[in-house]
Length: 54
Image (cartoon, rainbow, N blue to C red):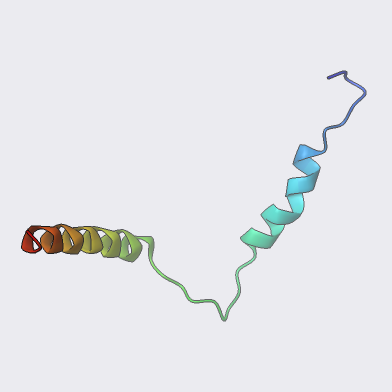
């Protein structure tokens, strides 16, 4: 790529950064620790069900 060409990568993603940085007051807020805990519990549940299915 020559120095005269502009790929537009940074400029095209600037709108998305602004969009995802904006917080909506009506949005559901979930603590990241809650999501991790739910994932761990779901994984344990799947393993228990696999053991019981034998």
